[in-house]
Image (tube, rainbow, N blue to C red; front, side, top):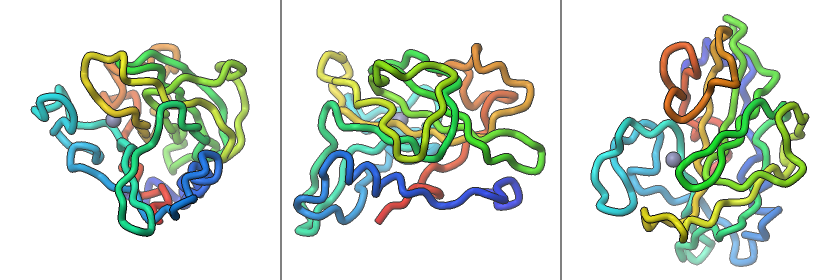
Length: 196
Ligand SMILES: [Zn+2]
């Protein structure tokens, strides 16, 4: 991550909240586990035919983790999804497994672009609407059930992190244009997510 652009970004307690809210610590939560295709900017798929993605991965897929005995476990359907930082919901948009919730945060870089986080493949909480203010750790959604999808993919949380350009109209933001010039300048979410 370019430090110059991120004067106030700090590590989050996101994993800690996720463990707490989903009681993932029964066997101890040691660390997240990633296949190469789950990582930011990867061009590989980690599901189905394991071929190439249409475009580089716009974020990070959280699905697998290890407990203290090094057993690999995965997030279940309906796992609760906490907000990474305090912020405001600016957009809820469809994705190929469910919905994506986009939250704008109070951090800004030297160009006054605003930081956004995106939580993909989820079912937003009933009470969650555009304009709502959320606190770090608040549950905003649960994971979408991916078993209905033809892609044969495990339920997982897609996280994107990016600087929203000043010119952006959140109403127009969707998965066709996220990451394109003048929308969001994407960063690697692993740089801020507490990975244990
Ligand atoms: Zn993803």
